[in-house]
Length: 374
Image (cartoon, rainbow, N blue to C red; front, side, top):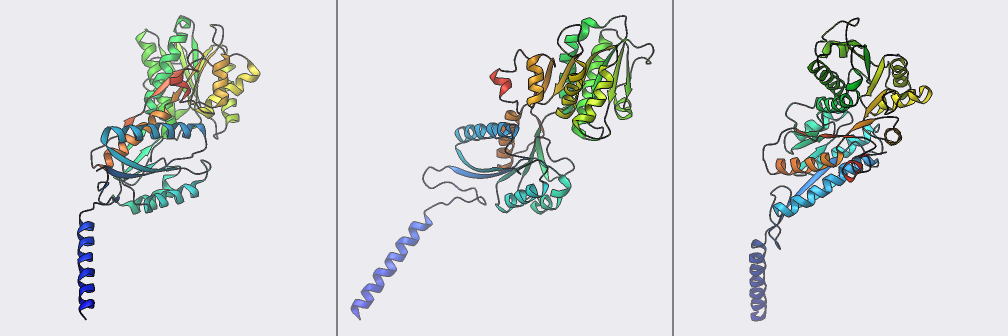
């Protein structure tokens, strides 16, 4: 009996020692954002759902995100565990919905989302119910439930259109004078917010630049762009410059090429702008049979938007004078910053991730090349 009591006393003492040791050890979870026992380092968990993951564009976004996460970890003395995914293609909406639901179920401290179809994601976004901060990126999450998305890391498309106009105008302004000339614009549609803002940014900035140099302007073509653009300063017959806007019936390179061909075939055309990759590739396709575009004063000066193998080849060869690229590396970096701030409960707001104009002169520079994709 004495041996039993002695064994029992030893066991109780051992349990007390172990209990005291357990009470003194801190643990880390996504719920309490605790400190790591060894280094006192806070750990955060991020989930990111992009529109894709295999293309070089999304690889550039991912690169920017990774690099900024490392910087945050160093500067803020935190550890960030993250999962960055995307569907196999940008048409696989169902797969993205599944990935987003998995991301929500992982109970992260912040969630990044570039939505393929907001309507398809609305139910899943609603389930978050403010428990996890959501940050949009790239084109963001337009028309998401009110208050669900705290901020977006994306290109200011109106400003990007202005960049295209500014660079084109510098190239063509010496060719504008007493004789009426035409500047064309091809947009893949007249409904998408990113496309319409970009197209209007180009038109409005071009009008501003032309009128500042005492030229009169008339905008013609698609009713949406004509109606929403800044007021023209003259009618078509008397204007120094006509800005003609054309939109195909459907979003295809072939139909954009048809619209671009109409503009390129006009004798007074001196320049043309394709406001996104599809429209710009349409301009290049139309020129394949016409051979009127180039970088000389006798050519029609073409500028585009975005990247891709067709546009990069056109710029490199001089068929296209230049193009505006978004900054996917910067998008990824800003996404990481906004996710960290929102995870810490700090106020966040939409951030313009900027854009750059590239020509044959700088297309191979490190700053530009990292943002170009095939």
